[in-house]
Image (cartoon, rainbow, N blue to C red; front, top):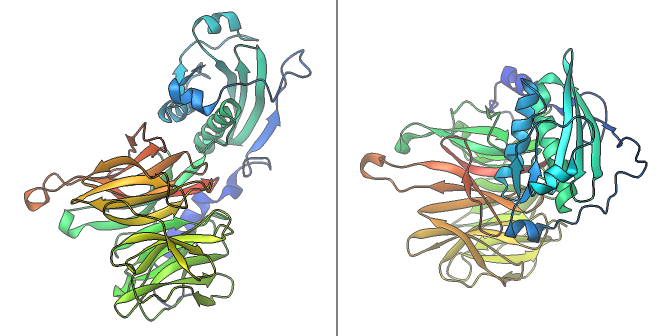
Length: 455
């Protein structure tokens, strides 16, 4: 039921945000969450779109980024769309964008082949009043075949989303796996002196653009998490001086308290089907893990070890959870059935393990590790084998996977000197091979949480 406490987000702000984030504002009904998509076929080629034409693999891209020609789609917003596509592909480390002039008609494949390119994009942008029509074609340079041809139509202000969708299509057609560019990251924006920082719930595109605040900073806010089934966030807030988990629906502006527990509720995560939330609740000197059904608000306790059990995360199929616990004497990672029962320890490296999160692919669990006074960020298989450290630093924590499991976002902090001088906290991304680490332009930030596509 709805909470009786004062809303964290004022009603007028909630209405404005709901309007801004609602996907109902997109035109038409198509394959990309309301974005109108129309097929474009290659002239004189009935079978031009050959699904088996591209032979590029992710492993090959790891050795050498795929050279792709990305001509400018035009001036103004057309150039902005081109720039976003190029940045998406170039920043992921799997592609090497090549600038060129837009060809007239069918591309000169021999010329592009001599440049070492494997693919080329062509297209144009047509402004139609308050909407845009973006025609896009992707060609295989080696075979001369059109791999994709689509015209996207949406409201003019959604040009950035069109660019991300096109980048996702290029990624998918050339690598054979789902892209992740048309997604967002929720995070905690921080401002002010380190000892008295103001924290605000915020959201941005996965590339760090179009950042917006969701709360005003009146109360300490932490650990946002996306619902994988819809545009909803769970987060912890110290509103009214009582730390508890809240829900905020980005589409409707609805806010509600997630269960009025006796103890402190924290570390929320949604089930893969979005119908329940798993979280930790303090009980005496420890904490236990509970599941709350979002339809009925019924709660179910699934651990009772007497220790600190926290940071639960579901496997993609919802059958298991990973969490960290000090039940064995030190903070380690455990896996157990999502319905409760015996927990199996999976971390055995040097140090203390925390903030585990299961990859959407199901093959890896990311974690942070503290040893010898410093942090590491790594991944391991769900049975604990194959542990690999991806990056290290003064503080590297709060890993979150992108929708296809290929990239992690995380919080990186630097050490502080006297009176907090030199301290910095920001959000970085790194791929699961440990390469291509880069900082997102989100300013002072922490606690990233990656959405699914179109969320």
